[in-house]
Length: 113
Length: 114
Image 1 (spheres, rainbow over the protein chains, first blue to last red):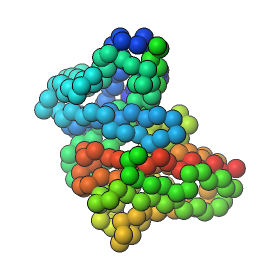
Image 2 (tube, each protein chain N blue to C red):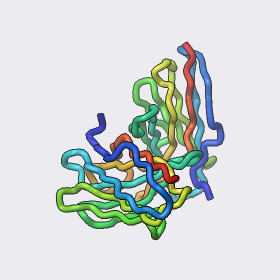
Image 3 (spheres, rainbow over the protein chains, first blue to last red):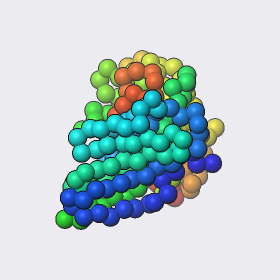
Image 4 (spheres, each protein chain N blue to C red):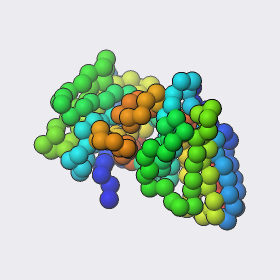
């Protein structure tokens, strides 16, 4: 049972436009969420996170929105740059003891010059 | 460079064999995590160690085991290997115990079981 779902396997956008990457979750116990970015032949790198007490967190060109009632979060990249082309993983967890991160399958973002 | 090192980068072995993957965390990090990424799967959490002790377990098979040594490096042992164990295995580290802390990932070990 996939508790974190990234239903679109890929997304292609034009340089300078907005990229919106979506993520849905089913476990209502999740109270923090992270996005990781992965380039080929490298390990994932942390991008941005949000806790369930917030509905938005912004860091430069990256903004994550959380809709708890819909169990949905999204990552917005504005403006998109060719260097943003990578696989983006959504991850979720709860702050209970011995919790673990649950990752989605990832979305491949391609930013066209 | 995340500061997390993993060896070897690639490993090719046969079914039924046993292999050991090694991970050195970032300097000062006490938590080590192991993840498996199969062909069309996301990152599957396997196990977490904190300062030498097992802290959390995910979908780790009984044929797999791990440990963290006093110098904080970690090893993941995979035995009685099957074709389906072919995957990328990532190690990550973080400073604290909580998994919501930023985790720093190594480049991964690609395991191919023939």
